[in-house]
Image (cartoon, rainbow, N blue to C red; front, side, top):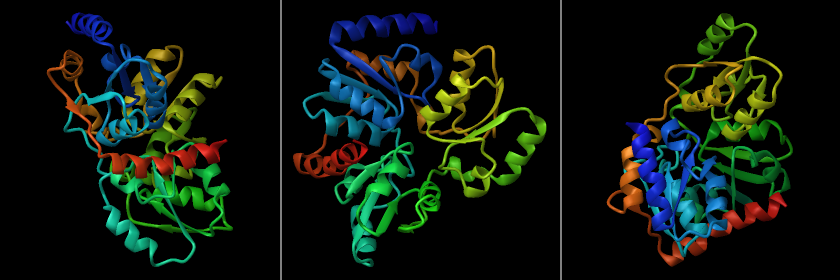
Length: 304
């Protein structure tokens, strides 16, 4: 039974000095026994504060890379080594540098959902919750925002005095949602608030009652005095909210809001990673880690 596997994981992680970090998009059987659950950057920050020598990440490759960059002394294991991120892997560092050369006085702002290689050529990193405030504080007029054009477009509309250069990249799951799906959902559930992630297209986002990161959506729904919500992000968020708020009703914007890479990790993958017989250890060269962490440190500086 699942509970037997969970009990074995809880026992092993104490014996082996393992801390489990799970992204919010993981299945509930994983998140309920993880030590830390949250957005990608929260996981890496909490890992840096953690004293255990081994970090097992239930998420995708770029998340485990970020954990390693902020905790280079730790052994970092990605529970399922095949779990990547199409958005993070869309471009190479050379392609970004070539784009940057086309503009004078240009800052490269990279979404946290990028590879370590991309972060080495970025001036500052942002999360979906911090992108707007950080971009306001950047001194340069031109901002090359990579890779999500939907998030970049949302930020640019709120900072009209800067010139945003956007590229045709983004999350294939969020960006596949169409306006007609929002209209249908709102007709079916007229009393529900629509909560949406800014990785969705602008014609979807315009209907939102709340726009924010995964953790922002969860916090809004939990604190709201409303009872019905349409969730415009990965459907596992809806499942978690059903557990946490049994007195409220949550509807999926679309049955297609499912990230196959996030769903690649199973409870057995986690068990094997904690045992030390599975998963993929994350290794980065000292040069890459040194260069990639610069944009993250700049993000932390600007957040202050």
